[in-house]
Amino acid sequence: MISDLKKLTLVAGSNVLNSGLGFLSGVLIARLLGAEAFGSLSIFVALTAMFVEIAGRGTDLATVRFAGKYLDESPRRSAVYFKVMLITRIILATVVLVAGNIFAGLLADIVFHTPDYVTIIRFATVAAVGMSFCYFILSYYQTTQQFFKFGIVNILGNGFKFFPVLSLMIAGALTLNLALFVYSMVGFAGVITGLRWLPKGYFGAKGREKQVALDLWRFGRWMVLATFLDAAYRRVDTIMLGHFLNRRGVGIYCAALNIVFAMDLLIMSAFTILIPKVSKLNTKEQFTTYIWQALKLSAVIAIPLSSVYWLSDTLITLFYSEAFAEATHVFRILFIGFIFSLMVQPISLLFVAKNKPEIFACIDLVLIIVLVVAHTLLIPAKGIVGAAYATAAGRILQAAITVALIYILIYRRSGRISSESNEA
Image (cartoon, rainbow, N blue to C red):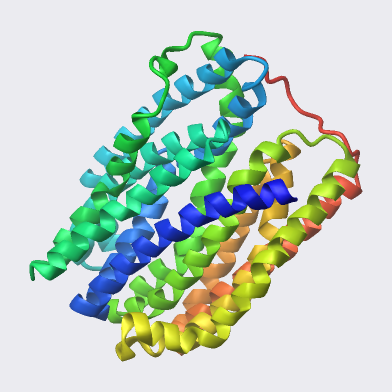
């Protein structure tokens, strides 16, 4: 518990600073360019989050799962997993970059009914490629548990975003397109930083590449689908708002949503430090111990965060200005859903331990369908407040489904993992 808290502090600290710099970048854009431009930026961020999953981010968990397993007993075998995944990443990123630019006009017309989003979509494909490779570098430092270097690469990414935006603002040259360009370069800055510390020739390791590719395909195909669906599930509200409302409405809503996403990074920080531990669990007793540890960790995070709920009106107007005051009610609704996610999502990593990544995909697919229906009904009727109710309800539903499946998978079946061969 103490060791986990120390690692969580390091990773969460970098994520908080990372998120803080990104958050402040958005604040500068919102205050200077207004809610409509911030709405455009929010659509860009939502599209980037989905494109980066197609560009290979979803394979990171598979890489950590297997490379971490063999890290101590066979470093060469561990390195082969990274080599194969790098090749996969290059292929997927190329597909996103080419296809995204070719079909940008069609996507803008189908989803948003306006060509105004074509430039935003094209910027998002470039941003997704950079972020995809940055996440790949971060997965190496996560696997080897070099969390200090993980934190630096993480921080410098959004630091690169904040300071150019600030400089453009001071020079009086900040425009939406320049802001999108800066955001598109963030991932590449992280890649350049992270590559400096990688062992020379690391990705040249030789081994049973075909078997490694098969292992990663068996597990990774579900994680690619699951992480894409998760990104879509997390951004469906933004996309649906862009479909039904003007960009100002999207900007007001996303002012609240960004605060929730900043808090979500604490959950991602817990994921980062817990995945290597989860990969080693085998018995029902170990699973039970992990569940209690994860719940305690979540409670330690949740208690101090409760103050944000009561201070949200002050925080939103302080950062975004009085023009975004409507976002306060939206945030308080979203916060309730966040608490459910905080308590349950770290426990969902047990699906990884049981070699059942397809469960993530199934849950997210159900949630997307439910949320699309809910947003279609509630946004035209209640606007951004309706979107907040639908999103919070989706998180509560996700928590309920996760708890039910964990109970069935672990306590209604054998306590040992029935895993496939993972020889490389």
